[in-house]
Image (tube, rainbow over all chains, first blue to last red; front, side):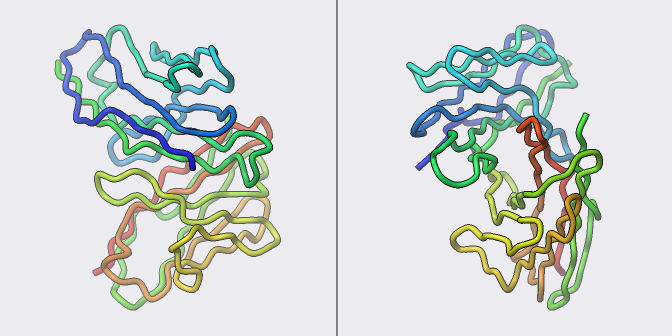
Length: 117
Length: 114
C-alpha cells in the first residue's frame, strides 16, 4: 500500500537558516504529492503540491521537487523565519485509475519545526 | 480561495454523551468529504469518506455505529461521536476536494471527553 516517511523531528533552527525536511514515499503509479503545514491550534493548510515527476511546487519561499527516481519530495526553504514554526506534513494521494478515491490522503507523521529568533 | 470550515473548534463533553461536529465547504460544492482523526504527536488517520446522498464508507477498524456521518447537502457533512468516552478525545479534521481537485482542510475540532 501507499506510505509516506518523513524525517523525524523536532527540528530547531535559527532565523535565516536553511531548512530541509526529507520525505520519501512508496506508491504504485504516479500519485500527487503534497506538503501541508499545521500552525499551533489550527487545521492543515496546503503549502505546495506537485502532480507529476520533475514538477516543482513552491509557495511562501518553500520548494519541493517531485523526484520519481528517488521517490522523494523533500521540502526546502532558503531562509526560515520565526513565523514558519509549525508542523509540516508530507502526503500523497492515490494515483488516478488505481481504484478508490484519489482524494484520500496518506500522511507522514509530521515534522515539528521550531525557528528561534 | 476555497474554504472549508468546521464547528465547533473546541468541545468538552461528558462521558456517555454524544457530540456533533460540522464540516462545511463555504464556496464550493463537495460531493465527497473526508474525516480524519489526529492523536497527539501522531499523524492524521483517515476515518471515513462522507458521500453526499449516500452512506459513508469507513476505514478498517473504525466503528460505524460510534462515528455517525451524515452528508445531508453538497456543502455540509457532520460527524457525530456517540456515547463518547475519554479515549475518543482527539483532534478531528475534515477535508474536501474542490472542482480543481485541490484538497482543502477545515480548521479542525478538538474534542475532550471528561
